Structure formats: C-alpha cells, structure tokens
Image 1: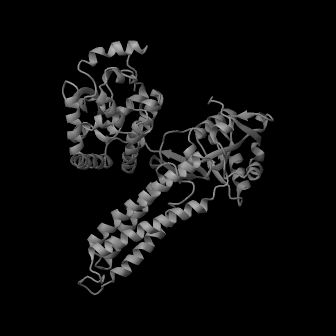
Image 2: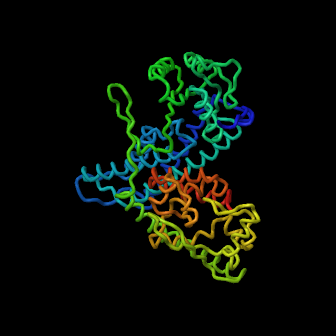
Image 3: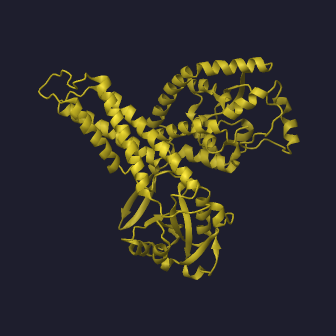
Length: 489
C-alpha cells in the first residue's frame, strides 16, 4: 500500500482548471518562429537574393514561394500530427516524437513530390531547412516544457483527475501520480464500487466522493478534466462503456489503466474483435535492422563526441596524473551483452590499492557484501579530483572507447561487475540482452539515489522498449543530470 499522503503534501495550491489555450499559444508562437527562421536561413544561405536559381526543365518555381508553402505545410503538419495535444504536453517523449515524426514525413513527402513533378528544389535547401527547423522546434518545446514543470511544481496547470476503481488499485494509482507532479495530474477524488463506499474515507490522502455509478456526475461537479479508471481489466466492460456514454459532451476525458506495466507504445497493437478491444503485445526483439542502426549511430556519434571532447579528455587526464600517484585510466572487468566479459575504461578516481580496501569500507558502513547498484557514500578511497569527476560523470568519458570497440553502446543499462550479476533474478538477467550503455535510464533518473529494484525496473523497461529517438532523449537528459549531479557520488 503506498504511503498515505495528504493533499497538502502533494501540491501547495492546486489550480485544476488549466488555461491550456495559453500554453498552446506559447507553443504556436515558438513553432512559428522556428519554422520561419529555418526556411529563411535555408533560402538566404543556399540561393541568391532573387530566389530564382537557374533550373533546367519546364517547371521553374520561385524559391520564395516554395519557402512560404513549406512553412505553411510544416505548421499545418504540426497541427494535424497533434503535437500540441494537451494530453502529451510536459511529460514523456510523445510530444517530441510527434514533432520529429511529422517533420521527417513532411520533408520526405516534399522530396517525393519534387521528384515526381520534376521540380528543381535544391537538396541543399532542404538540407538546411530540415535539421535547423527540427532543432529549433525541439529546443522551443524543451524550453516551454521546463516552464510548464515549474508551473506545475507551484500547483498551476494541473489537470484535475477523478480516480475510479477498487480501493487497493485506486490507492496504487494515486501514489504513482503523487510521485510525478511534473506530469500535471491532481487527484481530486475517488469513486469506488457501491459496496466499498465509506463516507469520509480517504484513499491515498484523497477523499472518496461516491460510487462508480455516480462517477460522471461527480466528475462534472468537481470540475475534473479526466476520469481515470484503474484496474479497468477488473471492472466490467459494461460499467466502463456506460461511463463513456455519461461523459459524452462534457469535455471530460476517459482514461483506462491496465495491469500491464513497462510496455511501451511501439510494442502494443490494438485490434477490435467483435466490438472487444484486443491488445496485442509484440515480443521484445534483440536483433534486426534497428540494432544495426543503433550500432551505426553509436559508432558515428562516439567518434564525433570524442573529437569534440578531446581537450576535455586531455585536461582531465592531466589533472588525474598530477593530483595523485598512479595510472590515469582505471580498467575493470564488467559483464556485457549475453554475459560477455570486457574491460571497461574510466578515469581513475581512487587511490592506488583501493580494491584491496573494499571490505574495510563496507565494514565501516555496516555492509557485508556488494549489492546491485551499491556504491559507498563518502568513500575514503576517492581522491579529491575523483569526487569532482564522479559528481560530473567526467570519469565515464573514456567509455567512449568501449563504444568504439563495440563492447558498449552510448545508451543502455549500466555495466555491472560479476558480483552484482551473480545476484540477478530472471528479470534482471534481461539487462544482458543488449549492450551496456555509457548512459541510460538509470543515470538520468536519479543514479545511486534509486533503489536497486527501481534501477532494475528502469533498465529492463529500456531493454524491452527502446527506440532510437528515445536514445536521443536520454542523451539530452544526460547533460541535465550531469550538471545537477543528483545521485552521483
């Protein structure tokens, strides 16, 4: 049972009638600016001031007109692709994925149409506009997401939720929503089956406002934005269907939660069979084209990152060498994909002979053995420069060479030592189905501040549901985690 939380501990002042048109307007303005800048720069950089490069063929469009049409189509695609849907704003990668998806589809369509109609639209023009516009669009979305998170932390722009379900399942969902204030959901009340209603009862710190039969009226009365049916697989389909009818025309969303967790959208296929929604879950695959693409991405990005960070690598190497005796690099055997052993590279952050003192450090902290994800706090073996390198994760940079050698990936589960792998259960063993990563969900979600159970769950969820776009999101979040230093020691 989740910890009983009072309403006051979740949000200081809840504003459950969010002005979504304000958020949409802000996004529209930055989207407009990003698209205009992208096509304008492409136009000015690639072509002459008249916008009419010499072309061969019977059709010679004005690039100024092309730019206007492209900008309008891009903005329209963002609307059609529902990239500003209030249900995807401020949480998860869906918003960014939709922006990315509509952008590449638009430019792919433009390229095909230009080829079929023999329109001489320069590849350089599209080559400037597409990446610049996409980068500006994503940057604008990231900026407003940060603003929205700050507003939600202060209690504004929250969507009021009425939770419906059996007592235990409702309490579990409420606890999960309370742990994620940035998601923007404020639970206003609970409706339980008629036989479970206890007047004045609190579930997860939230009052019981009625039974399931009264849910639509209760949601309207309290001004809820959505009704969340938890444990929908344990509630009769007739109950859920009638609730949907009762909510029609009231502007209140109906959301269903199922018992299946940590399965992402790309693996889920919904197919109606005789009016019954049948959900297929694709088996997780660990070979194939997307893994080849991941390897190519890893190799190219590792080379580029290494070249960019060469001055940083050199500076860190010098600082390690001059501040304490011993080698610059530390090598340790780790367990990789399919149980393959390899030697990981890190900048040395400990004094010489640190491994021989491990038992002593564990004993001082009252620990008898190394557990999964265990890392001693205030470790006396860490050097002065080592503390800084660990806090900023700069000690991990030499693992770029492990990526180039093919032992690691840029994004993946944290590579662990043999003593940790020996404690794996069946779920944890799934971490070994992919290459370990230089960064991953564990690193951007709290690092050593997480419990071992949470760390394993995050890694297994990544292994089974990863996408290349998701990897890009994790790499972007890694920079923020490094700056904040949360959970690093």
